[in-house]
Each structure stands twice: as C-alpha cells, then as structure tokens.
Image (cartoon, helix red, strand yellow):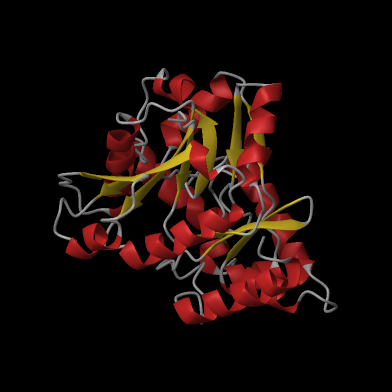
Length: 300
C-alpha cells in the first residue's frame, strides 16, 4: 500500500454538501490521488448524520467527532483544528475551508515542489487585502499547506483571540482603520485612494483583527518561515476583456490567484457587513461563476 503523504484537514459544521462538492473538485485537480487522504472534524459531535452518509463508502476519508463546547464561530473552528492536528501522521497537511473551490491543476505538485526547496515554508491564501486589520503576508486556514511535524512541534494552538484588554484595544483601532465602516469591500474595490489610505493605516496599527491560527502564524514569523501567499485581486483589477466571471467572482466572493492564474475561490458568506455583498451568500451564483471559469481554463 502506498503511504499517503498529504492529509487534507477540514472542519465540518453541517457542511456535507460543500465537502462532497470539494471532494469531487480535488479528484480533478490533484496530480497524485493515491498520496492524499481526508480528515474531517465533525464539529456537531455526530449530530450531522448527513456527513456520515455522504462519505460512508469513501475509503480515504476519516471523520472524527469533536465534542465542542464553544458557540463562537472562530473559537469553535480553532478548537476543531487543534483536535484534528493531533490525528495527522502524514508528512504534509493542507487545511481547507469546506466552501472553497480549487482551480489550480496539480496543486499538490506545486506545493510539494516549493517545500523541496525549503521545508520551512507555508503556502496558501491569506486574508484578502480588503479584510482590513487581518494577516495578509501569511496563509489563513482557508487554504494553508505546511510540513506537519514542524507545525505540531510548535506546541501552539489555533486559538484566534488575544486577552480581553487587547481585544478591546483592537476593536477601537479597527474602527479607525476601517474609517468607521466606510471602507467596505465595494468602496475599497472602486476607490484607489481609499485603498492607499487604509493600507497606510493598516501598516501603522498592525494586526487589529486576529483570527483563527493567530498563534501559528506568529510562530511562522518568529521561526523565519518562507511564506508563499496567493494574491487577492479586487474586482477592478480585472479589465473587461475575457475576464467577466473572474471579475464577478472577485466582486462578490474571495478569489485568490498565483502569478495571475486563478488558484482558489472561497465563498465565505461573511456576516460582517463591511465585507458582505448582495450576492455573497448565493451558493448557486458562486457555482455558476466557477463553472464558467472552469469551462474556459479546462477542468483537467
């Protein structure tokens, strides 16, 4: 039996529909399927029966139940990732959100080749540039690829938040950086000067909205990891010629590119009004745009 060398780790909270779709996506975009396996952390602790039905015949999928006591979304997600990391024995780990789509053919070969140059490397999708106050120079847990034992050796957690006094301080600074909510996704995309002002404010204040993986990212930085992050273009980064679906994907969802090629999209369905758009929770619309792009770039 071939030893798997990549575990794809994802947390599910009633996410079986997304994960079934994502599995098919990986079947098309992975170069060596016999080298990967999936680990799903069930954050309903077994209540989501549909999850087990969806993968009952999948030999390369393991589901583990997490008895999660946190209701706050980021805390719940972080604890599930910590639990999942305890059960990974492959050389590499890829953490993904269920609501992503991979465009990049042979993503696994791409990541492993980068690792062969320097094992102290982390690869993936940062928080988009328009999510002000977050980390943009290291990957987020939307798509984060790394060497497993090195990160397990950190002895750190994916816990997202600092101490209470720091959270209060950060909340004040965030309002300043986001200009009281004026600097939302739509305005940032359309007003170049607003992008420049907010970027300057963000550089001045630093990370004011830490999220899942905060301690891990801090350790990447402290240990001098080589960080390879995808770009997160604004809608207006695309011209009108031959980029219609990509432009719309960047407008209403998260689109990440590498050297101007689409790598992944994240639906994200944000409830935060700064980043929410009219269609950002429209699953069918998101899938429709993805289909248009796949038809153009080729599925395999």
